[in-house]
Image 1 (spheres, rainbow, N blue to C red):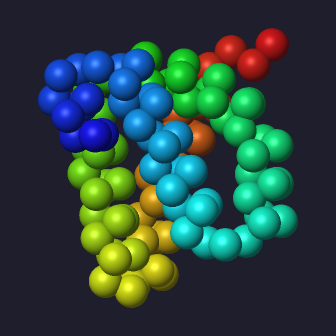
Image 2: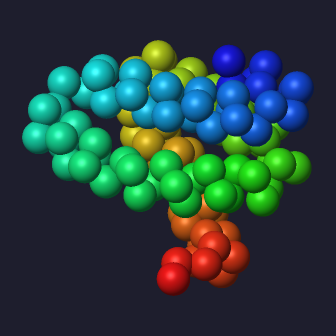
Image 3: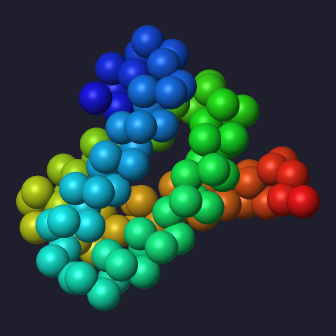
Length: 104
């Protein structure tokens, strides 16, 4: 779904699909406390991610590739590589947000 949205330059669909991926990952972890903590923070994350996604339309395909790769690692049982690839992507998103998103 992420790749289809990225190919179609469908920012809204990409944004929605990104959080669907996160929901699937949380469900897979079977960690209720972590899930509750993350869900409590998601409204803020969603606002920032929506803003970033609209500002960075040119990286949709790269983001979709990273998510696909992470899911392939996870499916192969390599949770460490899956985690590292998503973490690196999120660190880049965070750096961009801190520089470009008005937080006031």
